[in-house]
Length: 304
Ligand SMILES: NC(=O)c1ccc[n+]([C@@H]2O[C@H](COP(=O)([O-])OP(=O)(O)OC[C@H]3O[C@@H](n4cnc5c(N)ncnc54)[C@H](O)[C@@H]3O)[C@@H](O)[C@H]2O)c1
Image 1 (cartoon, rainbow, N blue to C red):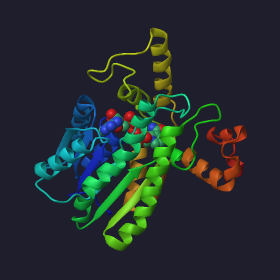
Image 2: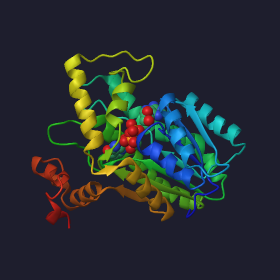
Image 3: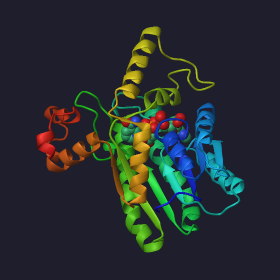
Image 4: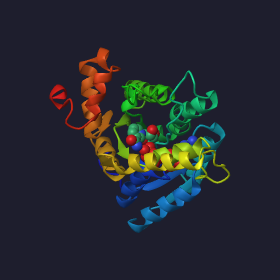
């Protein structure tokens, strides 16, 4: 798909971050957008930002839905069909995701399963719900967001990262297998797996909110002490503002990958460096020394 104008895109997790920036970029190119998120206020903000650059006649739908709940996903799919009066869509961006439950040994099972279910089941359920609409289109593309944690199950030697990594490996495996499935059974539909490195977004705040650790979302009580809150805010701020790539830049990389019909879309130089390093020395990937590859300049000579 070289041109998004006149197409219809579905985006999960459009409230902030890469989902918001995908929506903004697509709308600016004349693409209708239907987004879902668990945060209605954030989607309202995304919609207002999209409208600033929307060509005449482009439509934007916001729909509150949790992608890990099949009833809500089906209600979202039905809302898209109704609002746009169509049985087909062109693009499905399975972008919604959260972090959490790093340790399988010590973290709560509830949090582990919430993380896994949003990051993996969310992709699965939306693919189930929307695949018939992609197949019904003349030109379709499913874009599933994994992570560098879809090929490297770590964020460093001192920090377990099990739920997120397991889900992102699942997203990557599913999408890679879809490439062949679609080629055989629906060749007009393409599949891409997106593997971002560190992108400056509010995923730290949003993940805490979804897990009920902050008061960011309505009806979720705060569970942090003042000190914990201050420390958390500093970490969230650093994650968002010290990243090597912005969400808007990431959205452009993703959309270029879709235009070029690349099935694997690495986002950021850190992602490319990690991909090369893991392939080059898989047995070293979980050793202390390997973590240096994430630091700009360190390991460049190895990855070249
Ligand atoms: N930011 C990064 O460094 C990074 C790196 C690799 C992969 N990713 C992945 O990129 C995707 C987008 O993340 P982001 O960084 O833009 O974060 P973000 O938090 O800014 O955006 C994610 C959006 O998903 C929404 N969401 C969370 N749970 C949901 C649910 N159950 N149903 C519907 N919506 C839900 C959030 O409210 C938020 O609006 C995620 O899948 C994430 O895992 C991010």
